[in-house]
Length: 326
Image (cartoon, rainbow, N blue to C red):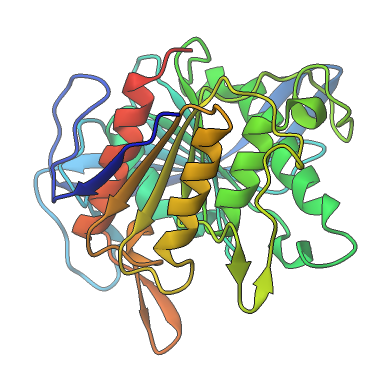
């Protein structure tokens, strides 16, 4: 077993690549039609592309949309929203807006969320030299007889993202990572470890492609044993999790009162005992929302672009990407 517990102090975000940037960004928006070819299928989708271009000044006028980078971005970021394949929900892509080849992250939101809920984290990652795909999926179905549709949404999105990654500078010869928050953490583990269902020779056939599993899985703030009074069995063998190739980095905030830290701690122990390459990182002061750059005010999730806890989590993800061997 290999289990490491780390209490993370505030750190700066390091770049995956090398370049320079500024802390302010200006939004420039265009609309274009994107045509994408995947095996046996040609799909055309209407996508909106937004370029987060570095600038030396920020404009505070109410009529102008301005984004301030949470940390100093190394690259400008281009955002493509409304992308979809024949078998997917809508996907948003954040990518460095410069020539290069970059590692790929596929990100999954939590219950009741959507891809845009991961925008702050994805923007910071892309600004450090990562191509991030985030998909919408029908999380409300997870506790219903239609729960398999959740995995249809997420797995088909993953396969599609890999098939078009090169269009956005993604390099599949570098590390491919799945990051999942909350419910997304559970789904990320299943997608990464259940090769008999999702792997190249697996039984999943809801969408085309014999797609390799990721090199890294980062379950973030996962409810692995219980959620809102419901309990679950966390049994890798019973769930047919047999793919031991990915590096697993379980991340949880010490102040998480939705998915208590013990759930990630115990899951990391079980996974390590089962022979998975597992690391646990506990973020001091992190809760269920600030790990993805949000705070909850009167029940509403509000973005906090410069949240230091979110920046720590980004650094953890970057470290995992840099340390993985594809």
